[in-house]
Length: 425
Image 1 (cartoon, rainbow, N blue to C red):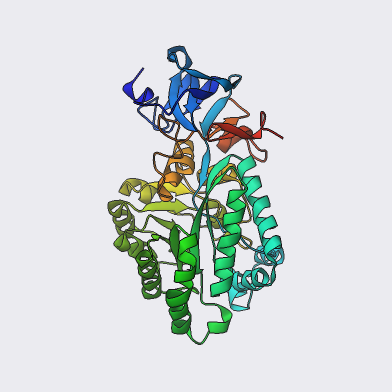
Image 2 (cartoon, rainbow, N blue to C red):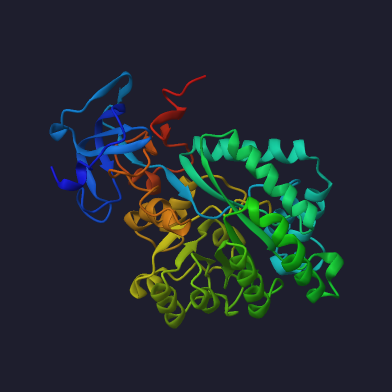
């Protein structure tokens, strides 16, 4: 047993014990084999929602147990950390299924946006929706994500684009988060694009965002984001928004280089953003700059796959630069309506060029780093949150191999079974 398996000062008696794990993915190389820290024949013990032991079951130490210990067996199945979804747009009304069908017939994404569709259409629908409608829809999406094994999830505003509607979306998100076992990380995205009513006055909207919207919304958010790309915000506009957000105590993220080499990746590196997301266009210089800045590259393979551009984020370039990679669903009504991180792992492999090990790591520890939760989420090691997924099969490779079904047999958040087998009513 390594010293890392027995932390100093565990938070009380063990109240959760999972034994009979055929293959445990810890995402901590110090605890097992390979980059995923795989342990065969393993057990996980937790106290107060935190892991106190993750390792071989035969080396499980004598631990003080609570009288109401929640103990069950994995039956030889594989266990992975709870998935962390590093990028979603959870709060919106309406859908754009017809636009998706039009894209399949050859209408481009930017063409639909220019015709009044795309994000602007969802903004109109979201503004018109009642709070209860927004809350119910977002809660359903979050529950679906949880059922598929996502235990920590980032969610953005960005479909309100007025002071009142942006704050309202973040308030809806806070209520949804309070009613779910999943941890929700809120991001303010008032800089999603310049709304239709400000089409001739970009500076006017940015003034409104910086002077009124940010003060109203910052107390409800942890991050500030901007869509720095063609048809959205320029590099200098994005810089203004992120610097203003940082002035309100928000950490920074950036939608970067999705539609072209538009300078977003270098801006994210320059500002030391926690993450740069999309990155379909990213050269060696940009990848090295992101790595040097410690900025996580959040890849969204569902979006690039469904846009059918034939392009994915350059995994080899990012890999050679040593850039930390993460995954997200980009769950949104226009370009990737999916809550499943399992699907993103598969697409990252078959469409995005990641190995299964890289994809699993990106969907757990890498994504946790993209949310400022490295070491707290996305891994099963002493001191981390006891968030895990008991898979239906015996190997993490099933995540890339066995498609079209939900492989999460049980989902555990903070040492409590919250979905699947063993979950309460």
